Image (cartoon, rainbow, N blue to C red):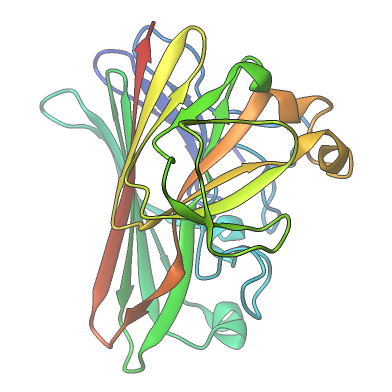
Length: 272
């Protein structure tokens, strides 16, 4: 299942598979790989990939009756168009609709669109959902971005102080982050409410993470013990990745017939 290589005029590029409209790689102009993708992850239809940017829709995690993280990340999307704009920006658009199999587990008619734009040191990912049927529905969603890090112990995340979060490891709700910066010490799985702008800091670079439409942000790393139970995560992979996900979880999105919703995650890398 060969990915589509999308390259801007300045050399910035992403690799995307139609399977899941899944971004597998992002290399800024003159830069290095920014996304973690497990060497032991399978790339085949019907199987979720470990790494890159999985598209989570219409259900986050196990918060509902659907398979974990819904069906979008394992579905075959249709490439609508891809190429460079007149200004040298690279852009690709994918779409997904209901089909008989999906209607059997989620009985709603919809159109999902993923638009990926890359240029310079920036990547923008926009997920849009339209209710094309005559019945209202609600959903949760996320862009499950796996950032590549040199060493998780050297990573800090800024912008979470004072925010409320749900701790999915302990099950605690209504928690408040009191720390000026977040450091990762083992397993972490938190859903933060109202986190529009974060900084992922490493010794050699800083990544600005901004989102619109998505009200929440998930911070996830399995830690050493849980990582050992994940067959599609390469040995030591937990030390080289951190998920910071743009998400709509705390308040599911509700769409009336004919209504639409859009959310995006914009990433910009700055070398230090």
